[in-house]
Image (tube, rainbow, N blue to C red; front, side, top):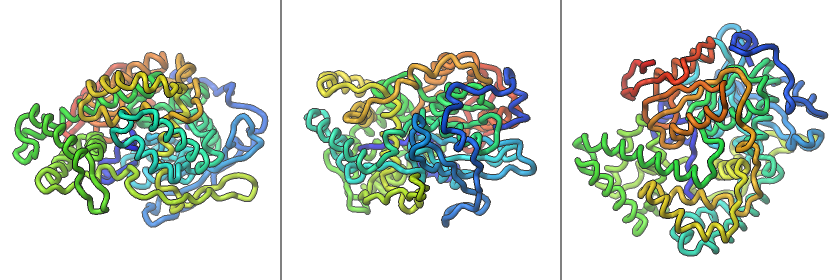
Length: 544
């Protein structure tokens, strides 16, 4: 299985190896009156979760910054039965300087990325927010230390089933193998798997808000984190404080259309990269952009036919190349590193540089998972960092996306439409089409997902929220920003970022400034205002 983590790009902290309320200020927002209880806000048995407070202490681990604090909240495993089993959700925070005015909660995307690890590695990006907030993040249920899901040995079976041309040649056999793998994923993940997904994660965020002592939730979400923020806003509209959604996800498109959008976006990003590369005498793909694109396609086909060995003994295939390039295209700051890695492959047959870009995937044997610790009261405690299963990221990505998607085509429907879909994907991108087509198959054999995200997250009555869309985003196309804004309704204010890469906060000083101004001071840019393109090496921001 080729895994792509659509998350906030931590390129400033790690150029190659990364894979990833407020009372006084909230009351100043337009339309914010005294908070009212929401329909999903109350219920029998929930008081014990809402009344808890977080015990913060220094984070354990060699890579953890000394000033980062860790904690946890306890949440119901099943919100329909809050008196039943529970699980712990891992938290981390940087304290506000001076007297905190509240908290801002971060989600870095994925789904499947550990917020605690991201904040530990990339916290410097958010230090300006500590002028007014405790900056807090978390590992969502099923992720990282929060009862991590895993497919155990089935992870390798999924990779084998979807990582070759067999899916196209013998789709019925592949679907049978995926169904068996789904059963193994359920077995190895345990009781959290039926209760994973964005709807439950958003309810966990309400527990966090109360435990943090904030009247409203102030929030900054990237990529998948925008879906999570929108679902929270739909569930708890009167608890929304200052909310920013950067790299806006779709709320309505099925996985097949999401895959097509991703293929088109990545192809556009690749074309932009090649146009930049061929102007450099060191570009290993020549000096003509069209020829360079043809050369990439030939290189992918050649490696699929005859993979080259790696330092780990595993073959490096054309689809491995596609996955690595796709990750590198998430940020324009990575273009020089991608150029050097491609030269290393083309000139020396060495894929080592490209492997660094794809280190977020599962390219190593998957060990048997250690079970989440039992606190002794029937609840699941936090998992030790060293016991988080190696395949947790792709396992959680699949589980959450499938839990959020209600479509479950039959085997007959899938096999009957595969040729047509393959043609559409290859037309969208001759490089990334095949890689993205596997998304069509990922949820086969799993229970049907919720209708809530698609049917109910719309026409919100909340405080104003800022939606940031980047024109050159390879993962979340700009049209998703405008479509989601229209769907969410009058609260949505759009900031148009004329830049490259996935999300704007990390790559555009203009976006960074406008987001911070809104979160810290409540200053919203006009709807439809923009930030101009920037030189990733040196920029003073964009324009309004």
